[in-house]
Image 1 (cartoon, rainbow, N blue to C red):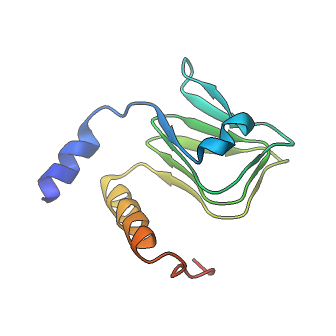
Image 2 (tube, one colour):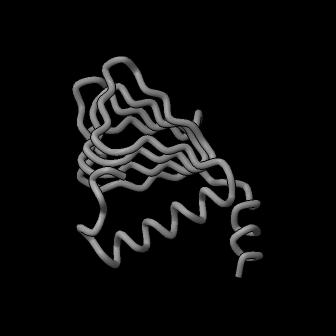
Length: 114
């Protein structure tokens, strides 16, 4: 099973974004530069996960901002209520996916101090 995780990680990362569809009005997506921007004065409710690209936060995110095989850039106007994570190693990715699965199975079991 660990071989399949490593094989999945070694595949070229396609640019993609995961968030609540209601957030799309608050996000600027540029597929050409493989970047996602939250402009100043806009709010993304919940988590924002971007694979294979850059996340440029100038506004607010009420959840976590995660870049898998990418980077998170914060402007001075940015505010993230959750965590900022950049995952660029296979073991970080496995840990991140495991935590996401556990949070889905046991919502509300997340410690605010994490």
